[in-house]
Image (cartoon, rainbow, N blue to C red; front, side):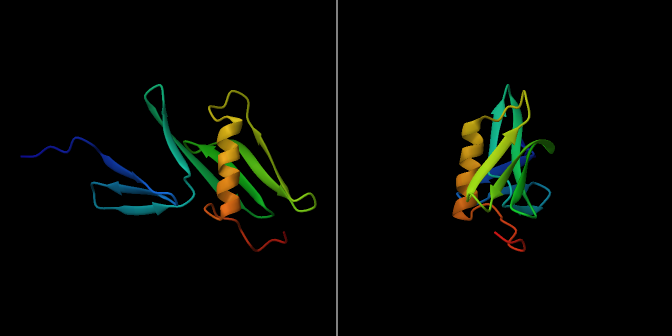
Length: 111
């Protein structure tokens, strides 16, 4: 009898995180730009697109900040909650992914 030694296999690509569960579920998640470990605990970052050029940043499904594109200045602004594990470098990386089109941008609003 072969025992499964892991509950998930995680495969990283440049455009998405592919999660494969041993139960046979296959899920492509394009809103997850990063997965890392902090003190042995897995940290999943999710950047969810909202209307009006706004993205909310979640760490393990908890809100930790936002990114906003200013249509007048054509620049990105962001904020992170205090005592958040994410740094300014993390958010700059997510902004680059948004600019490249690798993270979803809701196109219904006027940019």
